[in-house]
Image (tube, rainbow, N blue to C red; front, side):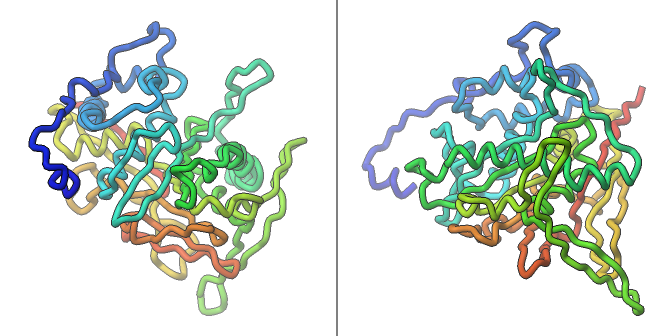
Length: 364
């Protein structure tokens, strides 16, 4: 407003929303090429609320690459949904977004501080022919534990290291500014339910063992990790300790940047048609200092005792070696994790879900 006033002008050209709004739901590829999740979003009455709130978001969403629609409808659905989620969260959190640049995905400013955020996702493993090799979902606790030790850190590491090699800090408009990598795991249809703990282990090169003393107090013991290895694949642990990683200020992560999040938020906004209800079930942070397990929860979406925001479930893992640290106050509505002296110090909101499933009920 100060710039407008100082210009002395009284008339300014304005683009109407219709001239810039993306048309996400008119297919631009043959029907057999559409992503199954996009088809469900486009056709299912249970996802009407998600469609409505996405259309509302598109009134102000700008596509600098020019391929958002095609990717959203096809193989890039999960990645583009994650990007749309980060965009909506930043808007709700009060950031001013500058979308002129191809890199990073989000050049955002708040309280006079600028943060550059690059979004990425963990993709499914591909075979020698470039086809997706379906990874079975582990059900046995021991199998899950084994995959969390090496397989999942390697998946996270591949995506993060690929972005690190792009050297965003050398781009003139990004230089000397905090850089945040925002990552979500879509390597498996159900990976969002169980891979959370592997990320901090890889980022800091440290896992934690726990036990209880004679008084029932929880004792947490750090255990350094040097490498992650699966078959012939081997990577060093501790992303934040890699060469050049000091240029990355933090990693942003959530299991909630999905179609279910948009559906719940659209439902809360009153967009669901009559007869549609949703039940959310999952695990969340347990503030009992003696407990080693999360709490379970289940509620009907819309229950006033369980309000939801776009930032709910987001976690920021801070780089202890960062050249340009992030001030947590800039992201005051999410969880922050700071690693010091081998221990993780977490600052978590009262209700912080780790993972959840949203069941849609349609009255016939």
